[in-house]
Image (cartoon, rainbow, N blue to C red; front, top):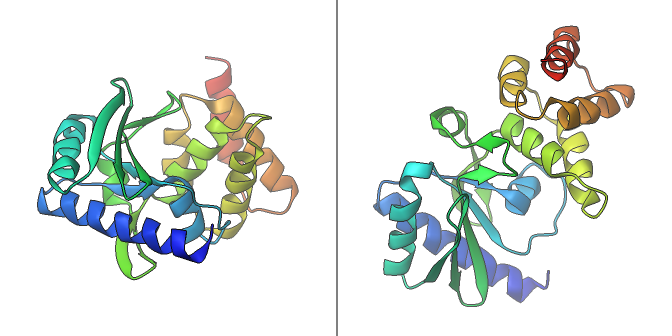
Length: 198
């Protein structure tokens, strides 16, 4: 992304996050910005903010009051906002397998994104979302998931609980990372295998 465009993206991120904070709406940064925060890659095209389902309508209103053009893209999981050519996705469910809940916000990592310190999605949630979203047409999600597992310490109990709705893809990513040397406790394989045969 060109420097000027990145400057605009981070400016919009700051405005959006400030609007949600002023409205007292918990959120975490996800998507490409979270991947960049964890040093996985630098290919960010938009802003993904994850909120609780109950807070999504208020979040949309807060962004509208902050000068965004807003609309409901899909009432099941995605609201959208636009400012200065930058798209902001308000997401409360990802790929049908991960719901954003209180624990997501409690476990958020506060990290520096450009000039703003923001809550970033926990690596366990991000890993499960990336593994679940990986398809041949979007290999970046697979690469992000495997790289994240190799580079970040994980709460494996929490990760396996988050993976219960899509154990096959998560297990595939974990096996791949394990074969590349990532330390994975044996109980993780057992629990995910048990989920597969339920």
